[in-house]
Image 1 (cartoon, rainbow, N blue to C red):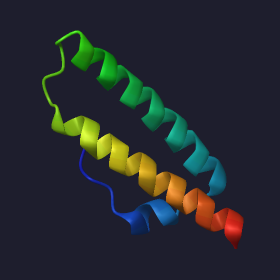
Image 2 (cartoon, rainbow, N blue to C red; image 1 turned 90 degrees about the horizontal axis):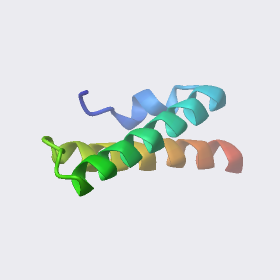
Image 3 (cartoon, one colour; image 1 turned 90 degrees about the vertical axis):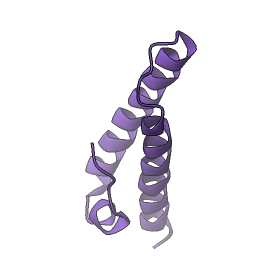
Length: 66
């Protein structure tokens, strides 16, 4: 999965953002479990997922404040 730009994330609706956040958190959990058991092949994916979670949370918080 390629990196996502913040401009793409900010265009999503609040419902889409919350769904995406839930999916990303689930993926992050799965990646942590894979790393703990030694099955994780692409360690850079954890970093990308963490950053995407931050982008989605930033977009949600911006919507709440405005």
